[in-house]
Every structure is written in structure tokens, then in C-alpha cells.
Image 1 (cartoon, rainbow, N blue to C red):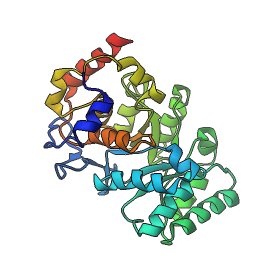
Image 2 (cartoon, one colour; image 1 turned 60 degrees about the horizontal axis):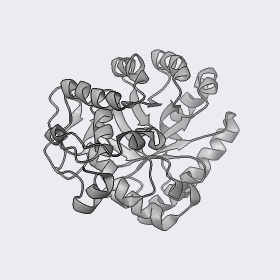
Image 3 (spheres, rainbow, N blue to C red; image 1 turned 135 degrees about the horizontal axis):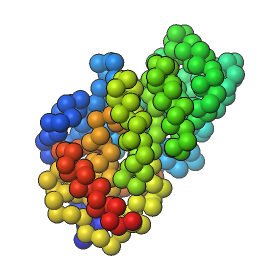
Length: 302
């Protein structure tokens, strides 16, 4: 049985040619680096696996945070989800390494008032040290965003951020998110989507693909519940057909192979696990028939 521990002991990230003819928006990359997908409506490519808001970032553990960021960048990754103290941990790493142009942080703001939002954004921009706009400003307050869309549009107009969006992991927010997509009010939407939580795939992801909205995916392992489910089970041998070498990559590759997904966020403070997760965005991806086969494997374990 191939376990996550076996994987990190015996191999690095999967190295194989990209082959996903049904998903033409994926861009071929170096065989040891993450595939990328264009941000809809732009010519900017985003690597398909990023880092979630790891505990190391939130605790301000600079040494471990640097290690995680280096693993991401070494494999061509750039997206990092940052909120609270994490915003300044990552900003400090960007500044000290002069890697502002290589990373793409999603920065959460908690405030809803104009002045307070600008104060939050100004503090993060100063910490990053390059004087440029933030890449992406996100909020979890979907309802406040919907009632204050003009505030977020102004952030872009004033050059404080390049993109704006909302993030939640509860299906009850899908309707409001889709209303925002219909209105063209968001550039990015972050939702949960996986073989254990497939609801977003019913309406929201198809609509995002149709409307040209970038999708970030959280909870690829459902806060660890996924690993509890697959523990003790053999990874299917046919997973090698799409360069999958661990159960973590099995989930990541399922998610990334949906054509609406721009980036899946894997959250860990374990460097070996981070490398394993990132491997899910390298090499071949499953086609639609294989995705259904993967889904059945997991559903049969539930």
C-alpha cells in the first residue's frame, strides 16, 4: 500500500508530461513544475496548486514558512492564501527575498468600511515592500460584498488591488456567489470542491467557466476527513496512468482536472506533505471518464 509516508520517503514530486486533451485551458510546463491555467479574461497564468493558510504562517514561524514557500516556488507555484497574521508572515518573506513578482497572495480583509479596508490593504502593501497593488483582495463576508460591490470595484480602479473576490466553504453561499458572477462583480470565487464535497460542481463551477470567473478551491482533503477515509486502502494501480503516486494527489488531480478550477489550495505546515500535495498539479491529469472512476472509488468508501 502506498501511504503518504511511503511517498515522501521514496520519491519527489511526480515527473511526467502533461496530457489532458479535453482540458485545453491547461498550459504545458516543465516536467518537474506545476501546470498553469490562464486566469479567465487575461493572459496571466496561475499555477494550479497553491498553499492554504497554514498554521506556520498564522503563528509567524518564519523558518518553517520560508521552507514551505520555497517548496512551492521550486515547483513553479505562486498562490498563497493569507489572512490575519499570515498576511504579514508572507509579506515579510516576499520582501526579504525580493520575490514579490514570483508570488501571488490572496489577501483577506475583515473590514467592511472604506477607510478600514484601505488601512488593512495599506499595511499589507507596506509589509510587502514593493509599492505595487495587491494581487487579490478577498473577503469571507459574502453578503457585505454583495451589498457593497462598488467598494471593491473602487479598490481596483484606484490601483490598490488587481483582482477582487469572495471565499466561503458552505453551499448556502452558492446562490449569492452565482449572483455576483452573473453581475460580473467578482474576478475570483473560492469554494470547497472535492470528491467528498462535490456540490459546487453542479451549478457554480459550470457557471464560473461560462462567465469567465477564476475558481480557487479550498478543503481538498476536507480538513483531514479524506485521509481517514482512504487510510488502509491501496491506491488504485490505474492511478499511475495519470501520474498519481499518493492518495493526496488522487484528490488534488481530481479537483485540478475540472476545467473551471484555476488553483486548489493545500493547507499544511509539513514540508513533506506540501511537496506531496503539490505533486498533484504536475504531470498528466485524468480525463472525464477517469474522473468518474475516481469518484466511484471514494464514494464506495463512504
